[in-house]
Image (cartoon, rainbow, N blue to C red; front, side, top):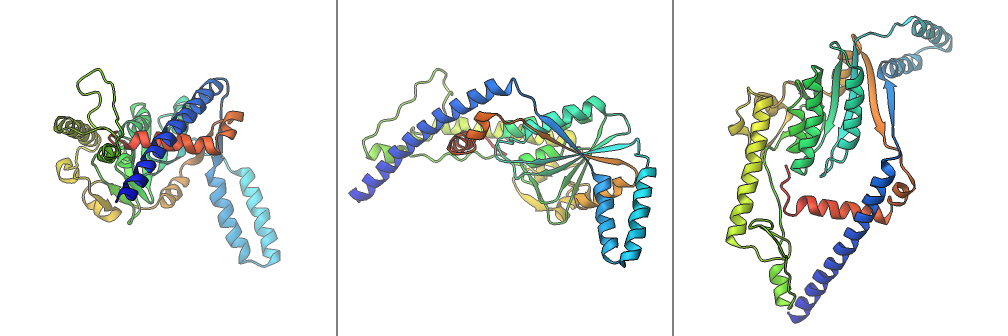
Length: 337
């Protein structure tokens, strides 16, 4: 057993060294990014999706024709393209694929700002959303980006092909309409904050850990410190408060939902979610875009941040350290949905 304790003690000390080193690297990388990012702007890529759909259909038709018929079809298609007048009704298509920190919000906010700069009352926005949730504060900001569109009177449709759970559903519920695939996962309106605690392990190995604080509840639970009953109760109160905010947010945007019945942390597939009014209708994002393409000019938007030398270097060990530290901070003691 002594060998086991020595091994575990060494692992704990190694973890402390790694976290400290990774934190230093992450802080350095983030500070350099901040200084350089202020001087560089990204670019917005715009894709005309109507043309993409038309060309896919053309490719399939050509595959079933003789060479002579194919030439005639191509000629007719080119002539139709020249005569085509784009609709003055536009549907902007945005993609959001979320991680634990909702880092894609940095692109989403730029895309939303671009839409708001040109949107008219006849325009619409489709958000193809995929996220299992993450840090509550990060997804609150992401949901606020969609709220910016609704506040300006732009109709928003959230499409869920795979998953929009917890923080992902927090984003989806802001939309005017939620469309989900039958087996997509929705719901999970709850809050969790896992906090593994190594205090007893450190104590057995003679390692002292202290945190100097000012404020009675500045640190209620920590990774290495002893967790008191008072700290545990306070931490639970904070989780309950976050959950209440989450429920109120959903209720405000989906008033027909029985929030108390569905805010249990459970998730449902699309069909059951439709029965519970978590979802407005069942369809894939492909179906939604095909429907809109008959009347709207579909414009896919994707913001690309300009990457400097520091960003390129950080894709190696520095980016791994940065992501590890940020994920640790997000999960240990921070409420996430």
